[in-house]
Image (cartoon, rainbow, N blue to C red; front, top):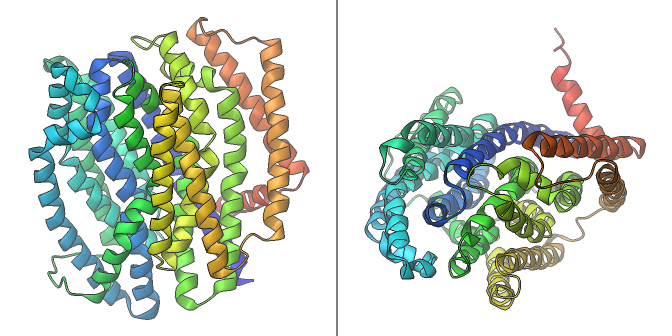
Length: 527
């Protein structure tokens, strides 16, 4: 039962990454609470979020996507079929080449910041003060790309060596740096939001510093190596460009939404940003966790030619993601106003901002299943070193996103942009799933459909429980914070009890797998 062992490795690694990412998201929400309280949703925050989109986009594409998924299959192939020394030599070459390229990119970004902001937020041009602020903040934060891209490469090395904790904890460091920068430095700048940009750069430096001791501990002592003609580098390069587009399609669509939102009413960019942050909780804690954990397993199975096990692991990974994503979708739709209100409604962030952000959250949540599933589907393609299929699907998805965004942005305002992003991601998933089935055969087994049926049933009961709570303890957006927080706490506690209780009674395989991992972690080791 080798596939069961590999599934348990995926579940265990996903648990480690998920817990670390949960901690990161908690600090991320604290960071956003601080930002909302100090700066609200207006001209300054719109300028910051546009400027932050660029390094944040590359963080997600590289740190949580392209560089990692392009590097891991090739690095794993060298580990399995050649030697550890050959694999680490490849890593050293990749680090050297990447460092050189990133210096050039960072300098170019600082130099061309006015052009970048003009493209990203053309609506800012009519307000020179906002445009200048966005350009200044972009220049301050652009060096962050250098550090976070190197962190992404370190993540690929550590994940391939089956170490997941340090890379997953890195964003915690960024969030802490940003929080402290606002609290300590905001009063020292003429434009207080500059303190956030300073925090981003220091956060990047600290994230890279966190990875290095763990690399040394795992025996990965990287050093400069200028052998750029190494065949492994060519393989990584051939995978990287389509991976940038394929695995990062959600972020690219968000990027397009930011451009179009800049011409909508004031605050639209911020509403989309805050809603995206809420969606990132289940997306980051579970989808990225499972995607990160499954890629080394996929790559190892493909390298050994174990395609039956490969398909079973894909099915298991998708079941694991949907087991959390489906109830998360129900909860985010039903509780969108209470969630946004409790997280952000304070200081300069008023009830109107809550309602506008909740509207964007509704439309983003409709695509949560697609944002999540694409992590596993993309990982499957990249473990096969198929660079063409994700690129084709991504191109179609981009066209769908642009077309729907233009069509929906005026009747639904910023909500239309969020809905277009969700629809485009769904198209991406459906296309790639069809192509993957043609490539490797049927990969969704009977267990998948049985599990999905149980998950839908438990999620429906959970949704009903929310409305029962609202009937007995009505929601009031204008109530005191304590009252709003109590309502949300009761709903979440009730929902968790109903969902997992129903899953346990239905004997869902996913809860059994998760409980087994927890039991093994808690059980004392045998002497």
